Each structure stands twice: as C-alpha cells, then as structure tokens.
Length: 216
Image (cartoon, rainbow, N blue to C red):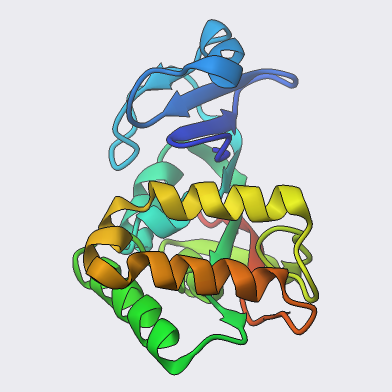
C-alpha cells in the first residue's frame, strides 16, 4: 500500500508486474483517477476485502500513523501475504518536530499530537515505532533506516514549493484549528516562519522498515 494522496493506498500482488490498489475514503479524483481506472478499490483498510490472490509484498507509505494500534492492522494485512512475503513501511516521526519555535507554539502542537493519539486518530510519533509494531505482528525486520526528505525532514530554509505544501497541510487540519482556537493563525504563521528561517532545524525523521512474514 502506498500513500499516493489522501486515502490512496497501493499494494503489489500476484504474478510479477501485477498490482492491486486499495483506497480509503471518497473515490479517487484528479491525478489518482488513473489508479482507479486500473483497479483501485474503495475499502476500509482496517479490514481488507478478499483480494482473490495472496500478495508477494505490501508497500505502505505515510499511512501507518493513521492506525495507532498498528500491530492489529499489520496482523490483518499479513493474512493477505504469501508465506515469507515482504512488507515495506515508511512513516514520519514527530511531524511538527521543527525548530526554532516558541514554548507556546511547541506546547500547543505537542498537545494536539497527544490528543490525536489519545482519540485513536493519528500517531504523530509512529515512525520510530514501526519496528516494534512489525515484530509484534509476526514479521521479521531485516532493515530499519531513516531517509532524507526535502519536505518533512531537512535543515535550512524550505523551498517555496515546500512552504506552499506545508501551508496547505496546515489549512487542511481542521481539528488542529479547533484545538488551537483563536491562536491558530499565530501558530501557523510562526510554524511557516520557522520552516523559512535559515536557522531552521528538523527534529522530525522519516523512518523506513523492511520486513518479511514469519511462518506459513
């Protein structure tokens, strides 16, 4: 499964060169419509439908954090993998981990992340937990690493297109807006200013794990 946009997930399965797409949420639109035309299904990723074939591997990019109880989801997904099938997960750790920020901004962002985790909506610190979740779900982790990302994990000032992407991301976070209340605009402005600063430093990490399914 791969995060190709909000709710879009893609997995590779069956014979070489064949893949199956799965999407959570509203039907595909715009750029992902091409995926839909090639067989993307709309479904609840917490309980996958019958794929009519066991997959050789599963790729999940920036979707794992939406499953705070990831071990249970991985156990379910693993039932659709062949024996010794592979899984590759990529996820951000500490999305708002960027400096310098004021104590108030940091407090609000950390509070929002804690609220999202407590409500079971999203785990902002999922990245460093991938290996543990995989092992609890019956996978053998063969490689874990962090990778550079010019949008999510970088030092120095963000490029204009990266700032635009972050502004759009923050604008989409309706629950963050509600959590911060009247301070939202100030927090957003400060956060974007942090990303644009020559002094900007990223604490956030993009984590990747590769593993294989154990047993038959």
